Image (cartoon, rainbow over all chains, first blue to last red; front, top):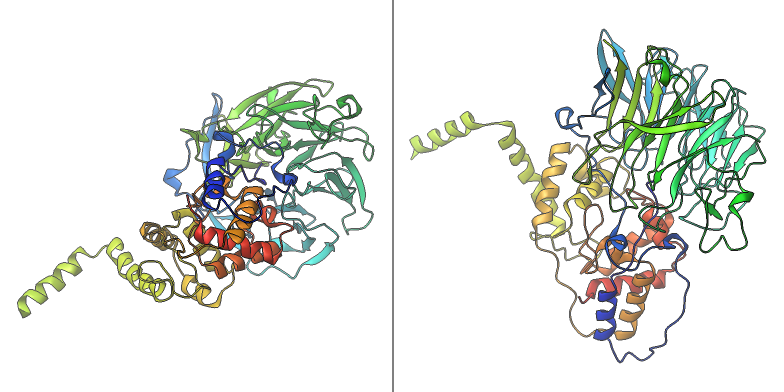
Length: 404
Length: 193
């Protein structure tokens, strides 16, 4: 996940610095604990030099966008280029595609279509990390790390967004993992994550959870705990259970931990392990002593090392082949915290008992020479069954359709 | 003489292209940069950063943040307002090629230097900013920077006034005092490889 980091000071420079000032008056070594956000980071070598990946603050030109590949029979096209920092995507009742952004743009955009021509408008700007968006009953909901706002009749007012109604303002407001993903559940409640404000720190009651509120912001209740940082969830169309991706801790190793796909079966009771247990199998080297992974809900599937699974959606369209119906598409944004990069949109197939039978790559071509050309973030099933995919690295939306 | 002038003017007209037009306005912009940041990217005012030798992406991002009003400074917001994406790219390219600022010389207060070095080690600054603090990608060069400027930047990150492209800086400065910032800035201005 895009997240906290800082790596190890190359020992050489500190050593050199110490030599340079050798003979300083006090040579005592004050023993201080390593900062919590760097726990497990290697001190030297390629691992120590990993830093968050930032794309230029300029969207990639349409002709330079990555050439993505889907299985035979699917068609991939650029739906809309030039959307800087495109994160979550939601569709309004009148067909507007709303696109949020995060650190870079601080904006919410609207993509509209008139007479076959698409247009991108910035409808909100100057917001702090406004990544969480949702649409319902004519209103656009926007969440920053601090609060959730509602913009009524938004599709009739794209040129001048109405003043928002703040429905909830008790969010902790952290910048690390404070950004939001929003979705209304089949129960009519709005589901909201609160990520842990660090790489790895002891859970507090206020963080590492998913909660839900009524549409007016009242009736807050915690749905799941031990959730390090989820940036994508959806509800199973039949069981109505909440499925979510969760980004596991940084460091530890190149190939572990594996990020998770989870299901909430007992809302309010389920604990998914963070910070004590990772990937359902490994007690944390520091926080895991005296804990057992068996005491926490096991992942429904594992999604790859540091893979940063973000948006996910059940495929509820009808135009893709039968095997995709009821499957889950998952945007794997790709690791920063791993020397070998990868990214894709994967698909998780479920059997009749809603058990994950396999997870396979679906939309590939995001990485070249270990550099990101694009990074998928969120997914949206369109009324015609096509899948829209957002990409915050190159600033674009893609459309994947089947047949013709 | 007159004939030659007319001819060259004509030539200029004939060869005018979007690129030459950009370089014209770019020249004007660069003159504006130099007015405060110095011809060679070295500023004399301790509150105004040296910009020479900064990684291109770091410059691009700060110009972008100023253009969008996401980083506040009256002069910089004015200068950056209306910059096109292409200008952003071109200015960053130019600035990145200016020479890096020299490290602060003279006698070094070993105690302060060591305090700063230890803080930098604990906060793992070099992991992103390089062992010699030369910066890379979106992460700026810190070596040789004016201390007053570095302290202000760290304060702004601590206050959440500046965020950056990731949450990394908010995490890195959490819990540090102004005295810590002063020591860090002292060390970074003089850091010896």
